[in-house]
Image 1 (cartoon, rainbow, N blue to C red):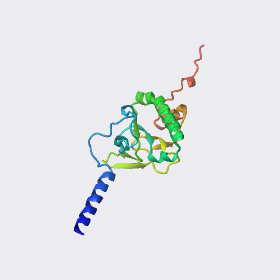
Image 2: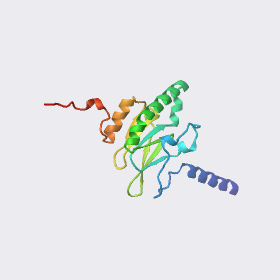
Image 3: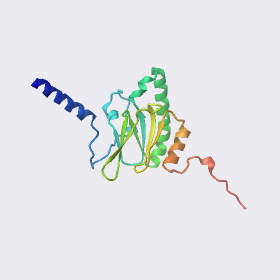
Image 4: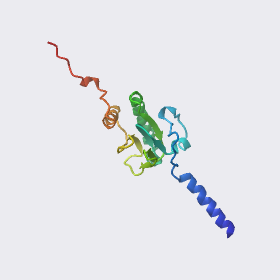
Length: 175
């Protein structure tokens, strides 16, 4: 009986340490970026670790719930997601907005009072997409696939960036 009790305590302690929320620290935030990631196994622990956001950030997410789609639909969605992400990456880099990937269903936003606000990605219409985050304001979750122009419009509106469309420039009137 005593051995069973010790085993149960050890089992519970090990489960808690794996699923507990990250500790609040004052050190460096998550520095893994989209550009740092190479294709890896879907169980890659780096991507499963919840992201901690401290500044302007776009999170690209693909959660485990995507396994409800057929393999062909998953491959097509992932290709589209990667293509769109690559298309916006230079704009984000130009405006110093971080781009981070995650397979975790949880994101933490660091607050000024050394606390964290949690964003859950469970129960969305699509288990993949983007989260636009500016700490101190409400996040914008864009679940599903977006065209390059649609996503860029969403990013420009959320982060209050100047429009990238050069055809909207006013014509000059000469006298």
